[in-house]
Amino acid sequence: MLSGTLPVRSITRFCTSRVAAKSLACHATPAPPKASQSARSSNIRTQLCVRTARCRVSGVVTMASGQDAAAAASAPSGSAVKGRALISVSDKQGLTDLAKGLSELGYELVSTGGSAAAIQAAGLPVRRVEELTGFPEMLDGRVKTLHPGVHGGILARRDLQEHTDALEQHGIGTIDLVVVNLYPFRATVTAQQAPTFDVAIENIDIGGPAMIRAAAKNHEHVHVVVDPSDYREVLEALQGGADAAALRRKLAWKAFQHCATYDSTVAEWLWGQVGEGPPPEQCVPMQLAAGLRYGENPHQPAAFYTDRSLAEAAGEGVAAATQHHGKEMSYNNYLDADAAYSAVCDYSEPTCVVVKHTNPCGIASRDDLQEAYRLAVRADPISAFGGIVAFNREVDEELAAEIREFRSPTDGETRMFYEIVIAPSYSETGLAKLKGKSKTLRILEAPPRAPSGRSLRQVGGGWLYQEADSLKPDDIEFTVVSDAQPTAEQMADLRFAWTAVKHVKSNAITVAKGGRLLGMGSGQPNRVNSVRIALEKGGDELEGSVLASDAFFPFAWNDSVELACKAGVKAIAHPGGSMRDQDALDCCNKYGVALVTTAVRHFKH
Image (cartoon, rainbow, N blue to C red; front, side):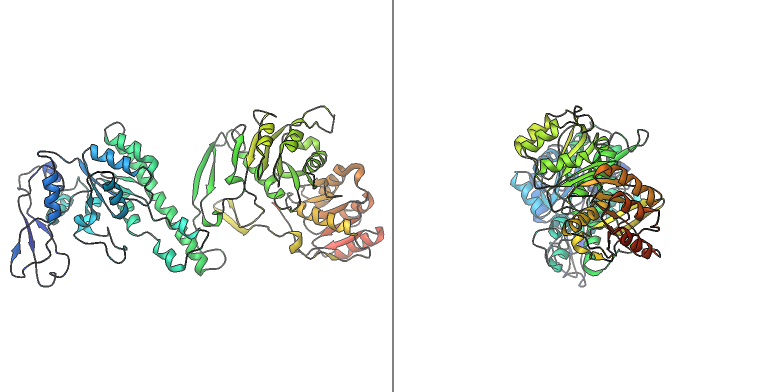
């Protein structure tokens, strides 16, 4: 018998010539009319769906299958089955312990394929789902569980008599626990060796989501489990140690979210095969990585999520970082770390970037990374204090010692304090040395990531989509339009400054010389004020420097361009395209300053 203690009064099969070659319907004689509802519900589990390989069109066959008979024979005399658990998992982590726990609690185990084999190998009794449905697995495994014998047992409401009557009429037993996780579609399509279209399609799970959704819908009566990390809690609840109703609702939410993430992954992949540009609809699956103390301000609740979409499958950047040391990350820490690491990874030369409030306040490129660090801090040591320091090369012991002991250039005494140091790697001794700087210093190791991929940004009631600003100087044509020609050194500095200005909030101005940032102006409502701030930061080092502007100059005379020329700037790069471009050219020609246009704008809001 499948389960339960009530005897099966009679089981008959009615065959006609039309259905003889197919799986034959089953009919169980109902329990006596006076049976109570609870007894009728219990009796559902005692119904045996009898199968026979042959039937006579004119006759009636009454017999039990060999499998059911074997199950009945192996059941201890007088034993009661508590319920039925259907298990079909791709991720077999914790499967044996779960199956053992359920079996000890008195649950009958029904399973499919590899899951059944794993349970059987553990020495536990298990029935194949084919015994439940009377159908073998077919269509190369596409159809296993899509059958009323499965879905009827999952979806039936135990509190509705018409449902229990229907199960009893058709000889279907209830299924009380559904443990399912899905074909590894994401792993298949993100494998190093990309699958063919047909192979990817075959890895789309159909029966699994159907069972999960059915069980989640009927969660008042059925536990649905999609995550191995929930196995222990479920077993405890089944033992009576938790609020089962509350747990079932939580598991139902998790099940629907599991299917939603799975479906969004399939949809994203398929759009990549057939579509172009932004899809008409899209879902971005996110996974909670950390609860944060608060958001930008203490009164704002916050959390950090990782992006589980295929577009982020490479696992690069701050979201993939390992924190080796220090206080927990905050909302603002994530924003600043991302700004710093995105900027430093945009440089191919060994580079250090220092960021404060998402704006680079110091950048320097040198073969000697220690020197790059010192020059980056000196660009604006006041802003660098309490900032984020990022490198695009490994931090070794010598560099770590320099970071640990470096004194502020403003007084030569105050040891520099930082919130975060982030790099692609650390030597063992370098990491140990850096940990000694401060108990609170957050030390992050992250796979390199220059600006790339899609960018999503929320506005009230909607989202803005764009491709990331991934253009580098090598992708841009720098056209000299002035009489003066920039030297090779000035052109190199213009490329350096042009990379930097892309990472500064608009209106953005960067002033550089010798592969280092002298000053920057950011976030001003008008461009001339950003120029003034950048020139002020450059101080007495401006002579022979270069200047980059993220957008064209609306005015030149007695404005941005002329101020820069008078301050000692010798080469300027801007996108061009203003109605007054000629004014900018005339001004540069008057002062003998080289003017270069890029035809590319780098707004950053």
